[in-house]
Image (tube, rainbow, N blue to C red; front, side):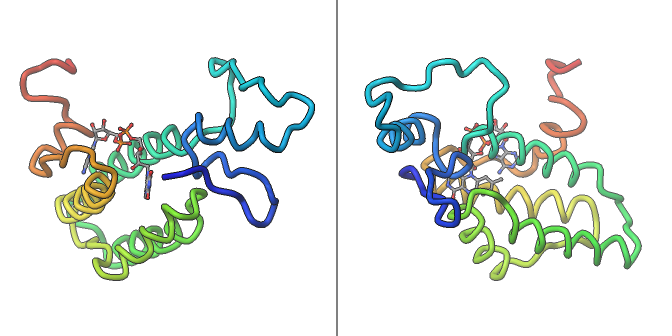
Length: 155
Ligand code: FAD
């Protein structure tokens, strides 16, 4: 995805761009330091698109893997609301727009933990395919996000 501008603030959108594209775009608007790319990525800096994505998927999959096996009606309704609201406010706008379209076609499945974890895994796989990344085996979603791999490598 090419660097994206935050239209409201008229500046490059860091949460919508990978760091390199963002830095390039950022530099074009800084006439005082035209050739200098921001170099220190080890400081505590705002997240770029990929950092934001990785952290967010980590949170979402972990939440799904700890969701009740038998949620109450109200928990199920709240989780559906959560994803609809999340999709509106996810700070990478182009990512959010595609996610909104996807969950319109495939509304959240919130009747059980397994159902939610599988549904979310499938949503993530839609993004993986779009980005040319490997498709994840959704039968292993709780191993990845809750129990650790069966070979004991996380113990
Ligand atoms: P990530 O895709 O972030 O995955 C992190 C880890 O999750 C992987 O290491 C793997 O162990 C595990 N994993 C992978 N697939 C699955 C799965 N299906 N189910 C369970 N676990 C899995 N980026 C864009 O460039 N364009 C977009 O349109 C876009 N849309 C996004 C929409 C959302 C809602 C989110 C949260 C992120 C989006 N991103 C988008 C970011 C993108 O998905 C990645 O997070 C980012 O590219 C970093 O990728 P990564 O290789 O670090 O692994």
